[in-house]
Amino acid sequence: MRIVFMGTPQFAVPSLKALIEAGHDVCGVFSQPDKPVGRHQNKLKPTPVKECALSYQDAGYNIPIYQPEKLRDGTALAVLKELAPELIVVAAYGRILPDDILALPPKGCINVHSSLLPKYRGAAPINWAILNGEKETGVTIMHMAAELDAGDIILQAATPIYPEEDAEMLYGRLAELGGPLLVEAVAQIEAGIAKRIPQDPNGVSFAPMLSKNLSPVDWTRSAQEIHDQIRGLMAWPRASTDVLGGEAVKLYCSQVLEGQRSGTAGMVLGGGKDGIDVLCGDGKVLRITELQAPGSRRMSAADYLRGHPLKVEN
Image (cartoon, rainbow, N blue to C red; front, side, top):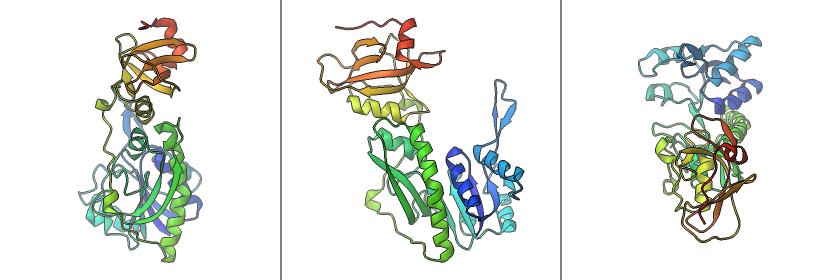
């Protein structure tokens, strides 16, 4: 099938690869503009999707790449009309498609979304699933509609969220899950047998963009909730706390210990080679095993303690 692919981050790369390797005619790739990087912001870094498309160009594939600044000024629409795709596939493109583009391809536009819709519509479904303590998530392939992430469902694939899995780990697994699911959905569309399952309005929840306001740890919460916060805010903005000595440190890894302790939430109970133990609001202890001090690198708790002696409360 003749397809235009729209995507930007690493999450979208397995989907693009899957379409190409399945033999579809990917007649164009749209991605966000290159971003300036470096100390002086004087170098441009291509998006992961662009890098992927370039690698296929190098291998002899004719896949033109487009990086429009805007989608609503008519320029992108003119390019798409010339490309004449039968289908547009979107995977974490980062732009909302206007109605005239949604209406262009005869077989419609479909989206690869990293949640089990109707749960977690929005920009950060992977993070919010972990932040909210979900035990399962997945990938949805859906027909696109004017309302964000509200289109009819074609296919879904579920997967457990493992107890120690953070958002970065889950991101990678869902990206890989999306590729073959997308190929199956496209095959069904091509055969004219793709389902259109309306989303249950009673099951809708949202996953808004993350902000730094989510970072500070409230130790009066339960150990599991704080553990989920640390996992869910990887790789940005990361959970943080100042109970270890006054300076705000970023938290990377933790463990919920068995048993109960008495004392004040946020009390530092001790630290050693296995981690730093902090009492939480439910009487359980959270062990911090990896963290980052200001101006330093990510390190184990044992390495942190060599230069940052703890004030332990009894």
